[in-house]
Image (cartoon, rainbow, N blue to C red; front, top):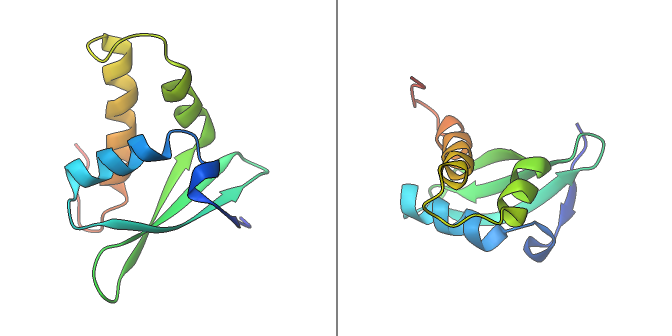
Length: 99
């Protein structure tokens, strides 16, 4: 895949992604983001330590679903969308076991 670097502001709900990342991994900081236009995928590079950057791939359709979701935070659908985003973040962390 060929990713083109884009601005954080071009990523739907990037602030919400950053908040979820901070909640799950307070020391991780997004440093760069790219977009693969052929498959509508964003890759966020997160600084984990002084020497390690971690790529997290997020489908554009998930971000759009969260962005366009008209339901409140207590709705099961909203919780499912956020859970899916959290799962993508956790799955990208080396050494994590997915249950």
